[in-house]
Image 1 (cartoon, rainbow, N blue to C red):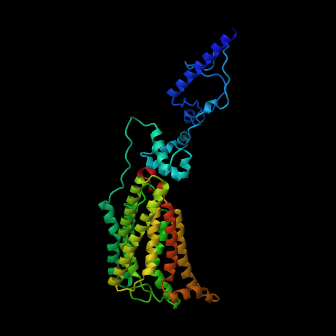
Image 2 (image 1 turned 180 degrees about the horizontal axis):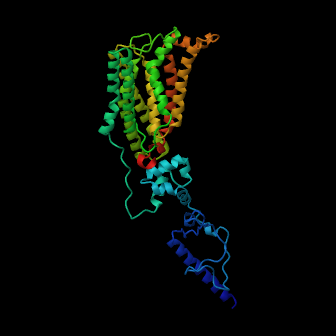
Image 3 (image 1 turned 135 degrees about the vertical axis):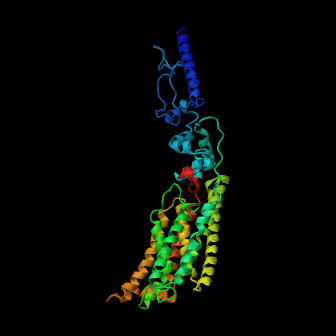
Length: 437
C-alpha cells in the first residue's frame, strides 16, 4: 500500500505541470511543446527564460511546491521537444525596427541593411526576406486591431521641383549671352553675377524633388568637387591647350587666346531638368518593383535594367543638348569630355540621394585631382630642370585634345555606374524617405 501515496503525489505533480502550461499559454508561451528557452517571452521582457531545474510553479502563482511534496524527475530535453522559435529571437534583436515600421517593406529593407539575405531567411523557415518581414510585422503588438497600412506610393511629380530643375539652364544662357556682348571689367562683373545666379539655381534644384536628400542633410564634400569639375569643363581644357604652347597671355574670353567652352557648361545646366526626371522615374519604378518583388534577388534583377535604362535616358538627353548648344553658340562639339563629366555628376548625385556619399565623394575627388595634376605638371615644366615633367600630358593632349576630362571623368563614371549597380539594387536603398532616413 505504500505505492498509493507515491502515485497520488506524482499525479498531483502532473496536475501542477498542466496548470503551469495553461498559465504559460495565457502569457504567450508555446506550451504545446514544453519549450521555455531564451527565445520565449521571457527574453522579450529582459529576464532569463532558460530551462531551470526544480519544482513547477503552483497554479495560484506561488513559487515552489508544498512542503514534503516530491516532484517527478525531469528528463533531459523534455522541455525542448518542439525546439525554440527562431523568429522570436530575431524579433527581440530588431524590435525597434519592427515597431517603427509602418509596413513589412521597411522591415525587409532594414533586415537587408543588417546583412540578412534570402538564404539567411531560410534558416528562419521562410522562403525570402519579404516573407520573414511580413511575419515580424504581424508579430509586433500594435494599438488596436487596425489593418496593415498599405505601402506609401511614390511621390508624384510636383510643379515646384519641375520649375526649380528648369531654372539653371535659362540663367546660364542669359549669363553667356551677356558675356558675349561685354568686355573688360564689365565682362568680369557679368561673369561673377552669372556664376552666382547659376549656382543658386542649381542649389535650389537640389533642395527639392528627386535630386534632393530630405532627412539626410547636405552631401558633405560633393559640392566642392562638383564645382571644380564644372569649372574645368568651362576653362580647364582650353587652359591646358594654351599652357602647352606657352600661354595664356590674358584672361579667359569668348574667342580669345584662352577660350571659354561655353557649350558644355550650358548643356550641363540645361541637363538639370532631364537629370531630375530620370531620377524621378528610377525612384518610382524601384519602389513599385519593391512592392511587387518576393525576394531580394528578384528585386535586384528587376531594378538593374531600370537603373541602366534611366542612366541611358539621361545620357541621350545630354548628347542632344550638347549638339544643340554647340550649334547655337557656334562652338566645336566637345562631346566626349562633356558627356563623361555629365555622367559622372549624375551618377554621383543619384547615389547621394539614396544615402551613398562616400564612394561618389572619393571618385569625384580622384577625377578633380587628376585634372589638377595635369595642369600642374604643364606649368611646373616651365621651371628649370623640370622640362620633361609635362611630356606625358603634352603627348596625350596633342594626340587628343579633351583627353584629360574624358579619361578622368570617364573612368570615374564607369566606377560609379558599377557602384550604383551594386548599391541601388538593394531594397534598403529604397525605403520611404520619411521613415527610413
